[in-house]
Image (tube, rainbow, N blue to C red; front, side):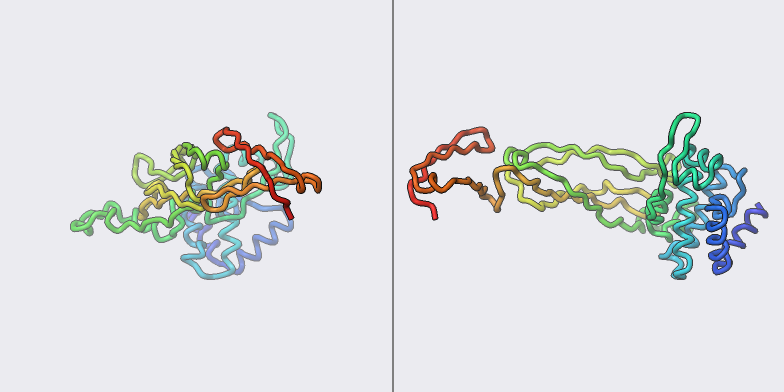
Length: 288
């Protein structure tokens, strides 16, 4: 434990560490273990413990030092690699180059891996929230005597709504339909402290004639986490282009191409509607 504390103390010397990491990147590639202040023999729990500590220290909401933004990203990248058994194995055997350029493994070719570059996304996946101060809430969860008059749930902050677009065909809007969407959300483990990723299927009822850009709200289906209340999911409907019709409010417009001779003659035009009817109408006037 003392050795790990020394690593954390070293990682708090920000300017020096910043220069050292980029020196190592230029010479030997990224040392993901070193970034977390660990050795290659570190266990999974030690990796998670190190990430918890460093990500809270470097989170830009909590620490405004601009020099730490790159370190926050590197800590997230190191965590993503070292907690994924396959990525960790490739990194341990072939280094950063093998991981990011692709390599031949005993089970076949492994395509290049690239970090998504969103350390807040990694942070939220780990803590269940993007708020670095929420971690303080479950640190006090056993101090019931302090909160005799209030439950922890009473001071939870509701997560911001998450918006997702839903594409609809014109036929679906005309007839109405039921759409199923699969979402991923963080939910509490049995200890009501840590969280894990869970898939959930939601059913979206599309009523006939639903206007474009309609907002359908599913309450409290967002991420769970310490100190937060699940946010809402907002589905925003979008009309897909149609090969014949163009939607304008409650009206449909259709263009019919005629050659020069047809524009001077009486012409019967057939129109196939969205409900499978055939409408015939005559063009009796000269079209200019």
